[in-house]
Amino acid sequence: MLSLGALGVVFGDIGTSPLYAMRECFGEYGIAASPENVLGILSLIFWTLFLVICVKYMAFVMRADNKGEGGILSLMALAVRSQHIKDVTHRRWIMTILGLFGAALLYGDGVITPAISVLSAMEGLTIVAPNFDPFIIPITIFVMNALFLMQKYGTGRIGVIFGPILFIWFLTLGVLGIHGITLNPGIAEALLPHHAIQFFLNNGLHGFLVLGSVFLVVTGGEALYADMGHFGKRPIRLAWFFVALPALVLNYFGQGALLLTSPDAVSNPFYLLAPKWAVLPMVILSTMATVIASQALISGVFSITRQAIQLGFCPRISIIHTSSQEIGQIYIPAVNWALFIGVIWLVLTFRTSSNLAAAYGIAVTGTMVITTILAYEVARQKWNWSFLKAAGIFGVFLVMDMAFFSANIHKIPHGGWVPLVIGALIYLLMTTWQKGRQVLFRRLKERSMPVEEFCQKILREPPIRVPGTAIYMSGDPWGVPVPLLHNLKHNRVLHQRVAVLTIQTREVPFVTKKDRISIQEVIPNFYRILAYYGFMETPKMKHILEACRQRDINFNVNETTFVLGRETIIAVPGAPRPGEPGMSHWRERLFAVMSKNAQRPTAFFRIPPNQVIEVGIQVEI
Image (cartoon, rainbow, N blue to C red):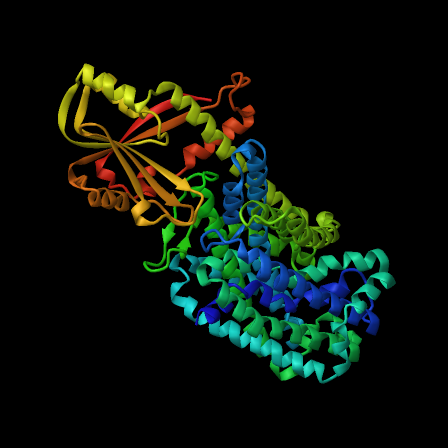
């Protein structure tokens, strides 16, 4: 059952590649559909599937799990945590930069995949009725609109049908492939790698550039790794080797056999492989499959965004949990509608899946290169592999990834700039938020004092105490929150019980309940509480208070006041102070805008709003 579910979530992207991959291998570079070229390209497709998915991801990369979780940010956290102390200043920084840029590129992929997948499915309608061409764009936009509107309801209700539909899809791919192979059984020769080598020799530079289109057959490879935590390694591997891989290979070989028999079918070998009576049902099935593929990628972008928030690379934004059972089923309205606008813009701008194919691939190849580098670091530092073993294995993968990346570089002027620009913007926002928080933290720390020193001061000069409990939230586990100092300075009173709460994210997906909090009673009725969460979790105040009750420290919610600092960032021109981190003035202003529009802690941490006091603080950076 897990393998069936994995079909519906994990393999949607890679499973819909037969719609356009073979066509683009011939169409983009004017490669003739001669027997030698058909065998050569098909051999490249087969060995790409085998080496990239079966060997690289299934055998090696999926071993690099962060307590069961996968994905580029999870791998980055694992690689950073694996570094030795002496490497903190440079290697950790490099791993973080690579991981962030890889994640940023996936946002570009998240915009292109729904557009190219649904467009390619809709284009099958022109085979049924050639006069239907003017309606392809409107129908595609209608499908996209329905897809993004349904996100707020979550995938829980419709997820149960994803697996069976994709199973039918893969079964249909296999049946069509077998039908095509019977037209020319000699297509099995493409299994021999020398046909791929001969293709390069015969076509020179154009043969190398075709790798950019061949790569389209593995564009869903990162999803295998990213969704590992939802299903586990074994179900994903079973679904791949027993369902997805055989169906894909059969279909590609069926398309190849069709081209050997009818070279004119190169215009759309996927749909022309089906009997005429089956084209319309195939368009309907293809539409459902591409919607599912798009849904999987949209959910993946939601997951990456939540991880980025928890790891401190993105401001707090509204996260809605659409399932009470599955923690991974979330909906992020801001990201959803940003993706929607991007997808519609791409459809209206590029208009055909062939045009979009020119923009597709470079973001995924860039992410795969980064994944290989991070996995090498994990192999060396965490698995204790020797340099020769790690470099020998991941060096081969890196050469392979760089070949695909190089073959995609020429796409940049023809649309490949789109995911790169999106990735660069996301990367800029992530690094600006991270750096800005560091600068803000330092400025607030200058106004604070150590908790121990503060407690000794109130013991020497006891302030007036009022009944009740106050919990002050602070991002600094070392010092006293500025709102607490302001309250004591201006109101000259202190609650009977005071707790300073800091919520920290660890570089693991989940934190067990027994490790959730750490409590220190500095002086009687003054507590320092540290709450720990994983980057796949969303902190909630009720969980923290429940964990405190289990430690025999009971905070009655009705008698507790939550005090939060509300910083107003003021960007001041000028160079940063010597020895301190700083940013250029325009990035400081960008950080101020991001901070102003971040979701308030009251909503993000689910704190009862009628028991919150916010203390305004102006901070110059």
